[in-house]
Amino acid sequence: MTLDIGKLHASRSGQLQKAVRNRLFMEMMEMLEEELHNHLWDHLNQNGNMTELLEKLVNRQVDPYTEARNLVRRLLAQKNH
View 1 (tube, rainbow, N blue to C red):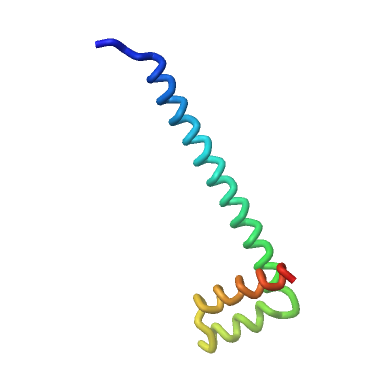
View 2 (view 1 turned 90 degrees about the vertical axis):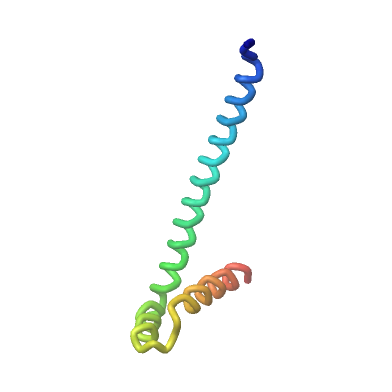
């Protein structure tokens, strides 16, 4: 049995490149998540939006999942204008 060093190196090099790409992707996703979180938090804390939202949630006037989706859409719409 002959060991092909070139193929072994190419295989390991490909694995390393894939691992680096995956790590960079995960880091980027974490940064994106933090940035979105900060923007949403700022938006909710403006003009009593958080207090109003909490009241609606407590009184079951809104569904938290639907409201979360709507908040993100409104924030993105504001950023596009």
